[in-house]
Image 1 (cartoon, helix red, strand yellow):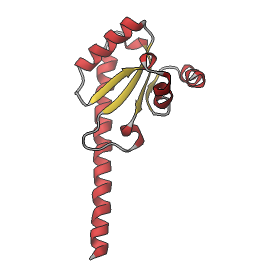
Image 2: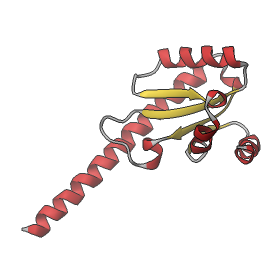
Image 3: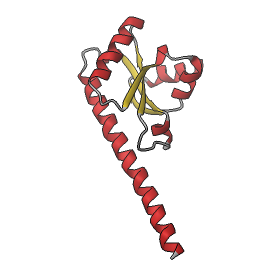
Image 4: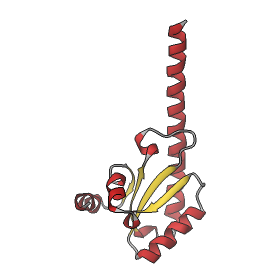
Length: 129
């Protein structure tokens, strides 16, 4: 009896994690389709998934944390972010890399790559931070 309960619990946990991963991947696909349809997508250097979704700690209530390196000035970055957020579900949080504090940037760079335009640029940036 204890074995069956234990086995059912493992199955439940595995199923829960798998569902969350599938949902996250679907949301990321949606994000990239929206982003690639934007006229200034060529200004995007990279997109990274970070936080609980990237680390496998996401719960039912977790949002999906995404960080974008956008090559424009601060005003252009903010406009891009707002236009993007308007087109996405509310559980996707998008931040602009250059507008984050240094300690947050370091954590973001440990995240999962979603899109990278120039890998060498991204590696150089990681070394600087």
